[in-house]
Image (cartoon, rainbow, N blue to C red; front, side):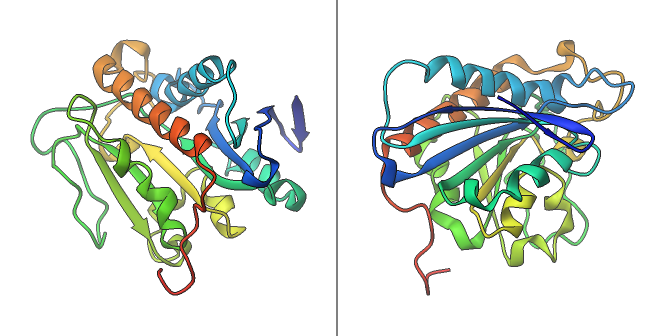
Length: 244
C-alpha cells in the first residue's frame, strides 16, 4: 500500500504470521537520496536488501508477522518514518524494527574507519570491514540477535548499545530508527557507518561501481539470517525490567 503524508509517500507491505500474539517485526529502508547523488549505498543498498527479504519470505509461514516499510524523505529530516511511527495503533503490534541505511560499502586500509569525536566507545577496527548495529539499551535482546548469527565467512558485527535514546550521542539519531526510539519501541540501525567510512557519502560518486560486492552480499545475508531468527521466535525482544 502507498501511505501518503505531507511532502512524501511511504510504501508498506505485510505478510501475516501464524500467531497473532507474537506480534510483528518491521524491516525498513529509506528510498530517497540527496540531490545530485545516485544513492547507490545511501540507500539503494538498504532497499535492495529489503526487496530480497520480500522475495525470500514471500513463501512459507512464520509465527511473527513480517512488515516492510520503504520510507520517503529520510534525507529531509526523517519525515517518512516520523509519520509512520506516529501511528500509535500500528506500533502496538510491532515487537522490533530493523532499519537498514547504507550496508554496501567497506574499506580495508588501516585508518579508513573513523569514530565520532567524543564517542564513548571504540569501534571494532580502524578498517571499515564490519557491519555496525546500533540499538537502545532498553531493548538489548533485539540488539543481541545480531550476535547470534555471526559466522566467520560473513562480515564481523559491531553492536553498539545506546543509553538514554541517544540524547548524549546525537550522531546515532540520523536515520529512520530514531522516531521509534522516541516512541519507546526497540529499533536497530544497521549500517556501514556512512561518512565515517565512505568518501562517496552524499556525492555524485555514490554509484554501483563503488559498492564493495562481497561485503554487501555478506551484510545482506546477516540481515536475512536475523530476520529468519526473529520471525521464527515468539519470545520477548525486550529487556526485562531491572536488567537494562
